[in-house]
Every structure is written in C-alpha cells, then in structure tokens.
Amino acid sequence: MTDAPALVPPLRPGEPPLAVLVDFDGTIARGDVTVAVMRANLAPGRALPWQEGSRLTWPDMMREAARDFPARPDRLLAAAASVPLDATFSALAGRAIAAGVVMEVVSDGFGFFIGSALERLGSASVPIASGATRFGPDRTRVEFPYGNPSCPVCGTCKRNRVLAHQAAGRRVAFVGDGESDRWAAAYADVVFAKDGLVEICAEAGLAWRPWASFTEVAAWLGEQLAAFAADPAAAPPPVRRPMVCGPEAWGPRG
Image (tube, rainbow, N blue to C red; front, side, top):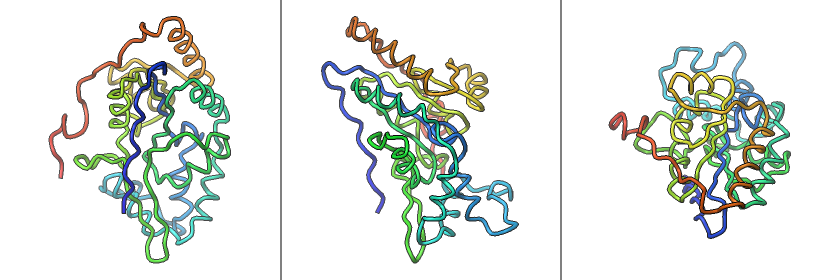
C-alpha cells in the first residue's frame, strides 16, 4: 500500500514563516544518484530507457527500472553511496531546525537511498518527500506517495509541496539544479539555482539566486532570521503565482 504523504506542519505563533525545500540528486548529492542506481542495475550493453528512445513518462520509467531491481538493495545502496554529498548541507539544516524553520528534501527519485545519505550528513531528522521503493522477492515496486494523481509528468509533485507549505503561511525557498526542479521553481518565493536550473529560470523569466554550496543558502537564511527577529510583523507573505503546470494549466491528461 502506498504511504500517505506527510502533512505540512502548521505555522505556530513565534515561528519564522519560512520553509526551505531542497532537491536531492545533483543538489545534496553532487551527482544524479537515481541515474547511478539505474546504471548499477543495467545488464552489460544495455542503455538507460531514455537513451533507447522510450516514450514512457518519468514515473513509468522508474516503475520499469524497479521491476528489475534485486530483492535486496545492498548493491544499489553501495552505488548510491559512491556519489559524493555536499557536506555544507548539514550546517544549513541544523541552523534551520534550531530556528524553527521547516526543512524538507523533495526528490523525484526512488527515495530509498536518501535516508542513509542524510544520516551520513548528520541530518537524519529532515523530512523526505520522494518515491517509495518496496524491495521484495517477487518484484520490487516503486510508488509515488507525493505524486499528483491528476498529472503523470512527475513521480513526486514538487509543485504541490511548495504550494502546501505556502498554504500553511510560509514563504518557500527552493534549492535545486535541474529539469526535475522546473515546476517547483515556478511557484517558490525564492529560488536558488545552479547548472541546468539557471537556464530554465532564465528562459521562464523567473528570478533566481546563484549558489555553489549550501553556505550561500545559509547566509540568506541568516538574513531572513535576523529580519524576522527585528520585526516579526514585517515578514512578507507567500507570493501567489499563476498555475503553469499540472491539470490546472494543461487540462486533464490520461
């Protein structure tokens, strides 16, 4: 059975009205762990699905890949652990949590390797919104508890996580690097972008802040916390943006 998505915590009196959502692949991890796991399980000479010209959606590609995963994830976890992590994430997470700022990792990947990565960084308490991979002797399955049932484009609807945190009264800062972050960036109040996400933001006319490590994000957070401490009433509300993705923008898709 698919797990229900975690509820967004309510904004309590005295808490900074901020949430920081962070991508995993290429962001906390310095490479694409989801692709590394897929490659580790490929038969010799076999290409990745999109390299073979597959027309499947990304969630369906992940489902097909998971069908061939072994019953035990040891080898795949080893492949995931070989991708280096950005050690500066732990300081950002620690400062945010200590100040009452909501942190969340949002990933359009398999999910099963993120918890152990956060443990290695000392940030195991940070919530994770991602795919849910179920390993078993008959067949391994990947489910999408954070998907949008009315939209097949993404496995994890990062857009909906941004909107949910905004609905709780928080401004949302999103930190990412590439294509899977496109729709989250379109709705976030503040975007930290690098690599492919920079071009995506520029083409869409979205404002972004460059970042190379989480040190820059932590510096911004420090400024926000200082401003909130000086005048809690002056915190700007979340920005409402027009719908540019999902069934609200595209209509229903089969």
